[in-house]
Length: 153
Image (cartoon, rainbow, N blue to C red; front, side, top):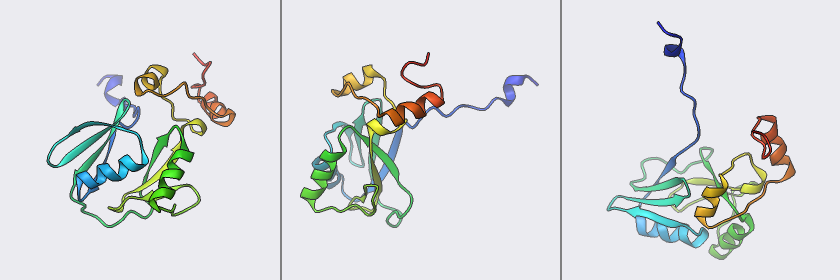
């Protein structure tokens, strides 16, 4: 038996997240009122929203109750713009971390790009029509501790 047979695959990130909704058009309208996004594609049962090199898939058929703790962090370039959009829609955060539930019970935390370890390569940001984006000193320090800082090679 070779050494490589015991080697585990390394998780590199998340390609996409699937959210269950009851109406694709209403879901696209809801998310479009909050976020500027490009629709990658749509079928009778699914819609795909581009997030640069990742995507969100909206699929028909909610099969579980509203999320309470289960959620994902949606990274944005302008958290204040999201807050303003939510105010216009009359949507309040369910906690102090800017967590919301969409009309179908999917819980989403709105996370600012500048203050987290998550990064996108400059060519991806450029392709998304944003940037350059910068990190807070705290986020840069966290990245450096992992050997992932902007000047680490």
